Image (cartoon, rainbow, N blue to C red):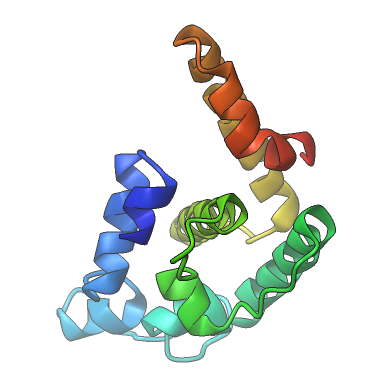
Length: 163
């Protein structure tokens, strides 16, 4: 339920659905499906499993390290970012807005990683922040359009102001 609680964007929900059901096109799966001859990561030459693709690849680990310290500066709480946290999200039984925001950021980050790897681009944190800022501006615009500015402020202001 995490992707449905943190976003209404169907492309992000769809990405998470593919990850949960192991239907995501990492090289390991592509080789299993006889689409590719090689199951190796194009960034580090390790076996490109689902957890490697999003969490264990050296390039991606650097990205998550940057995201972790950025998030700590904003919300002042520590997240471990284990491969399970990254792949499935953080359980939010208390419906805390900060955890909801974190789950959105994790999901948005996985989409960023996917797009970078798909286009053979570096997975860098700065370009992620630029895309996230653009997404927050769209969210703010939508909230103004529908007279929901207060809802935007309650949910996204801390995150949007940090970008």
